[in-house]
Image (cartoon, rainbow, N blue to C red):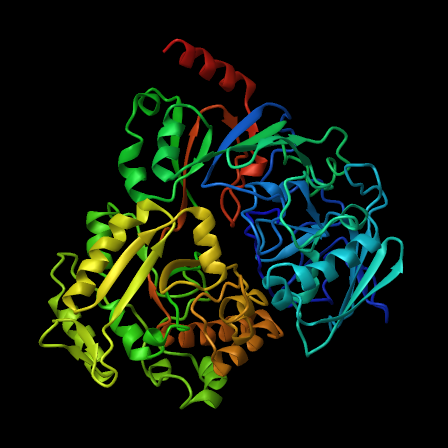
Length: 615
């Protein structure tokens, strides 16, 4: 999907009585150029472009980017295979999200959206000029075929995301209506706006459930050009792209070519960047950020290294404990393991003090549960008293902390007490942590996909050994890692769940019982908790922003005290390093850096090339 894959999912209750571009009320709903989850749209019907782009950005030039591992498929929608980086750029969605509003969408493939006041259905009217790369029009049949195919053949995410859609109807060649059921779900019109539309006429003669290296047909600004599986893939901007002058596209998609080169791991990738093999990099390693870029090109100003703040939710990154394994089904055991992770020492010694500790699943936003629950949150949680940990009502959650010295005897003592309460103790003969009833020793594997994490996990392993726990660390290649995650074939992995400023239906895929056993779901921990399911539905069906915030905080508290993960860390800014050949807009929106609004500055590129040739 087009924006950061990531996909922004921000939900609020639309004030349908507001002007914000809506036509007069009728039994047939209100028709508009866009839709906001809560409140009014920022951009009027006659808007020309988003505020965070340069409408006069020049088109042209090429950009080289990096990917890690390998790829063997151009089908990113199914569980099988490893899809090529950047493949989403060949497709388009019905609506396009703005990056400077909590959750608002404006017409892309659709020229208008119609919803009734109760949001029990949504209707999209496709643009007559919308075209596939083969020149054929995008039709209502394409929309319906895509929706039905994603539900039946794609990754489990879609079945949860679109789970409340009960019917889809073709009203004419350019108009589609989705009818909802299962109660009020005010986010669904926006969720359907995020639907990636695929060409029915192309896929009818092909098996969608299989991987493919045949370049598929799209309608977006780019198409696949040259490629070599596992080594590189290049995307070419489409000449005569039908949507280049749409307000949501002006100032974006400025590169003529975008190439992704694949590297074995992050270390090789960094060295390739420094050698000038590619142009732009998001840096996710604090060690690299602190030490890897002290090289002549940076000192000479040929490379720029920048920290750009953002206001988006940082979500949760954590050690995910697989409760499908009997070892992790006891909450006390999961809680105990967290006392062996010394974040403060890691931050001081390994991360150069760059990170903040994760404590909420919705950090860096008003959605994070802090302090004791408010009266509104208590009202939401009260029906579940006795079915959730009592701490949900009586204590603020914070992960175990240390003084950063590396001396964590007090924490290990707390962990040992919890393990003892759960029936575990040190066997006098083997000196291993052993379950008193079953005689089983506590052993598990921490599965990694990047060697960069080994330096972080090995101290954790050492602390676990002091509790009598035998943990092994295994790093595997990207394809094997993906396969094992999809099959839930792991004990502990490092999971990451990005969050928007207004969570909704995607929470089912993250924590819902229905997804615990669905291959390829994001519920890595295997959470099966009826209370969590109820709280998720409260989030999905929240009628307004205030209710949404309270329901999200209530869900956050139950997830926190469930101890399903051992929280890690986050930063409230983007770390970028790039060769100085780009121009970019003056405004950085709420959601952070929008690289698709950058462009190649011809003068900078020429000067850079001349300096590099001169040594």
